[in-house]
Each structure stands twice: as structure tokens, then as C-alpha cells.
Length: 221
Image (cartoon, rainbow, N blue to C red):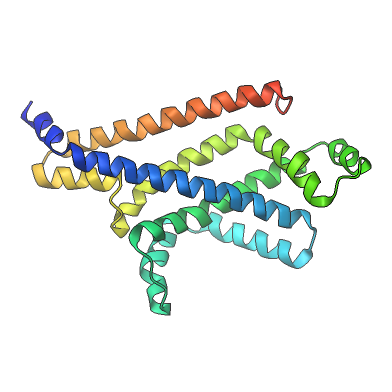
């Protein structure tokens, strides 16, 4: 019981870590989603040079361990006179890393998208950006919700790596508590519970969005 009492005394550390994790996750996820959308719009332009650059960027992000990217953002860029605080470096790393994956998910869904939808929009006089905003983007985002949900869970888990660059998120909070009170099991059990809470909310939200997309005819299963 004394160990749980120590956990309770350190609740402010966990609360601050929880809020920091939420901030990292929400901001980086939104930015990554937008980056994936922008990349898909550029890819739709069929410009060979830019498309090769995009595919090269995605290939690099897919083969680069996230932790190394976080190290580069926080410890590598200062050698070129570019300095970020730990939280900003963490958000940037999550943004670029998962933005590449979002783009790849969107690109895969775009390949299997029925051509008739695009042809109908063009026949009605839609311009390129209108076709993208009103036809392509809703389709690829709604039809790829299971994949997006998985990627968001991965993004949430990747926030834990940022404790290595001194970001005070949930894992850093648990590590601080276990180092202070020497209770590693219970300290990290609390961290697991906090990650689980965020994950459950995320899964519930994706499930509701899938129901909405099914009603709108984007998915059938």
C-alpha cells in the first residue's frame, strides 16, 4: 500500500506527463494528416520530378528508425545553427515521420478508388482542386480509417521514445517516479494504464467515424 501511496503523491508528475503526451499526439497527428493530404495533392499533379521526390522521402522515412529521426531533430540540427526545444523537436519528428505513412496510406487507397467518381466530377466541370477536396480526399480518408487508426496508435506509442530527448511525457514521468521511489513495476503500470486510456478513446473515435463513413457510402464492411 505504501507504494501506491507514493504513486498518489507523484500524481502531478503523471498528470503533467499525460497532458504532454496528449499535446504531442494530437498536434503531430493533425499535422501528419495534413502533410499526407498535401503530398497526395502534389502526387495527383503527375509531375514526374516531384513524385520521385515524394516517393524517395516516403522510402527514407519507412526505413529510418523513429528514434534516430528524433535524435537528429534535437541533437543533430544544432550543428547547423537550428535549435528547437525538446517538445518542438518531438512534434517535428512525429510530424514528418507519420506524415509519410499517412501519404502512403492515402496513395494506396487512391490507386483502388473507382475511376468513375473522378470522371463524373470532371464531367460536371469540377476543377482539379475541387475534385481533390470534394471527391478524392473524402473517399481516401474515410475508406482508409482502419489503417489510419492503426497508424495513430503507432504515433501514440512513438511519443514514448521522446523521453530520450528529455520530453517530459508519460514514459518520462514513470521513469522519474520509479527512480525516486524505487517502484518500477507500479510506476510503469500506471503509465500503461494512461496509454491504454488514450488508446481506448482513439479506438472508440475511429469506430464512430467508420459508422459515419458507412452511412455515407464510403465503406461497405
